[in-house]
Length: 46
Image (cartoon, rainbow, N blue to C red; front, side, top):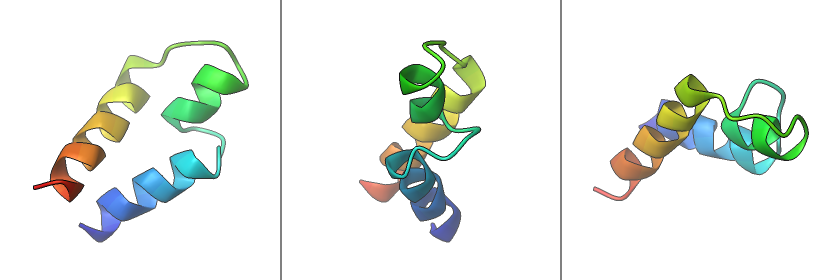
């Protein structure tokens, strides 16, 4: 769960190598980053 929280925090802070950073700063869609972000949200909300 701590890993999931870290993934969400890194995305919130737009750290390089995260899904939101790629979407906002690079205007690209990284499928692997998306699934990391998605799965972290699912685990937090269980």
